[in-house]
Image (cartoon, rainbow, N blue to C red; front, side, top):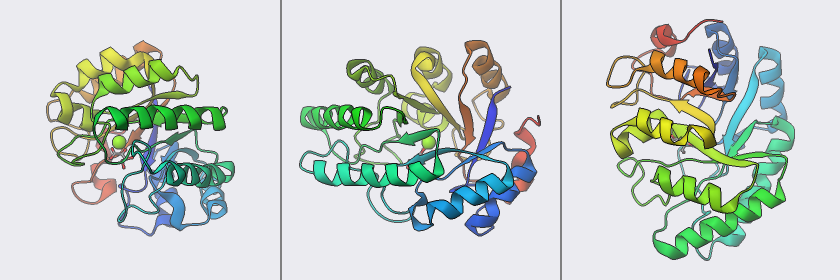
Length: 251
Ligand SMILES: O=C(O)C(=O)[C@@H](O)CO
Ligand SMILES: [Mg+2]
């Protein structure tokens, strides 16, 4: 069975952020991720994760917080300086939090110039932080209109083209389903380059149960594929988080 992490930006939001760690550990998660941890001192987050016995699995490049700001700038021509200073800020956080991955967010741009800019910035970031795992994640255009990376094949093409050992795919069942209608087919096609998995129910983004996707079958497929990464629960709980955790296999 894979190792499961709780996305504390979306789960346990009934509690203040610092109390979500202990709640996640008590529920049986072994790790946590926070999309934009920049509002809180990295040292405090790190201490709290360690005290709860949790690994810190993933964070995103800025924007500064979940409620405000664009989802990154990496594909935006003319915003290279902003991208680079944001990335360095993420690295400063990461030097304390030690996440397994930093998700580099593409931002809002289209066309060949955006593709070139994204590739250039990814190459720069992979060279700048060769010991940090970096991911890119296609987001569905209904939720993120205009977001550059909305295509798994394009993500795979970029990862192959850049060829950096520390750059891989972030596969999210919810986005894969919304983009293609067949998340399992996306997984089969791109399992080999996937470094981080996020799960959310399809077609809604609630608990990973029922719906049109076989989650237990997917977890078994992850094991068969030799996937060694984390599986993070990234969804909007239908009611209180703890009440919807029947899907979470207990170690
Ligand atoms: O929306 C998602 O899915 C994510 O994983 C976020 O990192 C995007 O902001
Ligand atoms: Mg995701």
